[in-house]
Image (cartoon, rainbow, N blue to C red):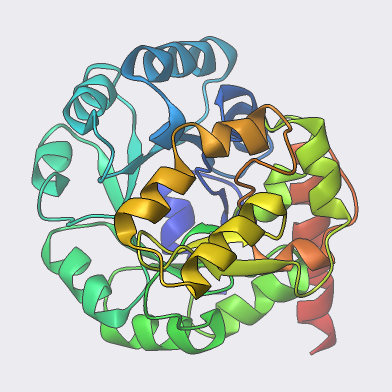
Length: 311
């Protein structure tokens, strides 16, 4: 196997990256993943500036391994977060939901490696032009906020791999070693996994939410709220209200009011399964256990190696 550029870039043992997910990916999960040889990510999208600082400090007290922070560029306190990652000398930042031109040069001039999450070749090329070190090609299957193009991973990964020279990390619909191998065959050099790590012991999501995830079947998630920012949700009472509002042609203002504040926290963090916003990927249908993050990495890597040998 040719030297893996992602392993070299991040100084990790396995090309397995845990996604930065709101309300479920704090320092404990990042630490468990990085200590097991992957790349752990602290998801800053649901954190106030002082909370992010605290998570970075706790991570650094618990592990010497490389880690990253995920920054959704739409975030209201983005400048405070940028300052925090620079001051704390966070080695790697994953940016999403915004223009990579805005902050990439600033982060890179402070010695930080930058990876942009994209849902199309057009944005992948923009990320490369902005100086990003790698891109995450995230397909329509992914949980949480999602691309408007609705291109599936099977189509997106090879298109992005062909369009850019920087390494491509595949995301969206990957929870097993078999799926990881498929992503690598399509041109990715690593995988970013979200939903599988939501169902880990160290994830900060509520146990009600984790148990709902491992009991999910195909068709239990849907890409919703497309007039605002498309987000993949588990179907529940809140989703039914959104669906009814959209069917009667509700305005953006009305949908925003229905969404309200703290809806994702209520669902994923506090475990309110009917009125909360429950973000998870389609691959939840293939997840059947809550395991320690290290066991998840071991399982994925061993299956990846075993299946590769049989081909």
